[in-house]
Image (cartoon, helix red, strand yellow):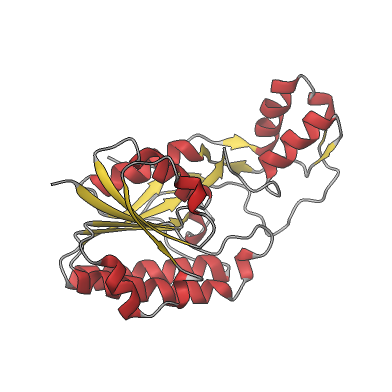
Length: 278
């Protein structure tokens, strides 16, 4: 029997790439999305059901239970993530509470596996290179809400013998990225021939293309690995190197102006993942 996979946040940056991959597999897809976004998925033949919601995180547990019936796997990619606002927004608390309701509903419905999307921001950044054994020390409402959800769901699903995986994502870029983020900003400036004003660019990060991240999430969903999983490359690169690589594609590295913006003093100097994906 084909696996039935429910995806939340399907129209988001990560979710769209997850659905694209699933559309090429022998599975049935159920989507929980906001009304008006269904056109994104009109050419996908193995979507068996689309459920509309004004806001997933304010739906009742009973409503969520009805949507989880006859579902084998949930990939929960929905979360509030507006650039420049999401880190300290109280909307993260709504996402936390709503996600717990979804988990409780999925347990009642008898799902086999739940895949949650976490963040590297859950970790203590002091050592720079982060494994799943690195202590958690979230420094924002966003990160603390994600960490709280991880701990809650770990115990919930353990008590009901349901497989649970928590994919901690590091730094993403790629198709469909919000134009306010770094890589789209750089590309826009290169195309228009304008100077890109940047900080020193000395910060070291672990960047992944969102399409590669989606492949890893789907692998986790369809595989046997459970628990916390770092979704990363393990390859350190400075912001300067990333910017120079992008500008080099356009032959316009002279448009990069490092030091034009002050460094964020609270920004960690190094954030690189140590993968445990098998």
